[in-house]
Image (cartoon, rainbow, N blue to C red):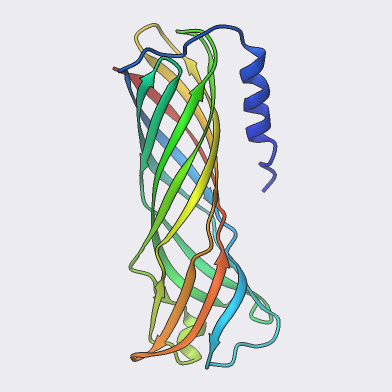
Length: 223
């Protein structure tokens, strides 16, 4: 996915726009967004393998589009804290020796994220921003895929994981009543583990580079 330039574009736009505060301290912004989630999912380490993964096995998580909500509080005129709410669902498929095989099915992820953002631009004008903060990915109701079930796994668990996120975006006002069009790009960095069980016995454990790009567009409302 060719999105590496997005944060740079937002940053360049930010410094190109004159002006001071993007909002006033104490304001709350609420965003309704359509979000495209594009994770990696590559295996970085095999810690346990009792089911005999073929040599050269690799993995990739599929992409998804999901609705999200963002709530933002301005602690100062140009500094805010933002958190997001949403659930995204993914399968993990094999690559290499198991190309096309399903390893994980229907893994639901809650990406609990808090970012500290700095806003550029004039009050009431176009407002680019950059941000960063911690994230905690919570995995819910994941299951072994058809291939890992065939290899003997009866249960699968992704470990919840603490990571970090970088963020850049822009809010473009639509009217003078606080309605804006919002574009946002985040890059997450985290390395969760995936464990498969046969009954109560751990038969496979792998570590993955998830590192999703999360791209959102939607409407922002100011209160």
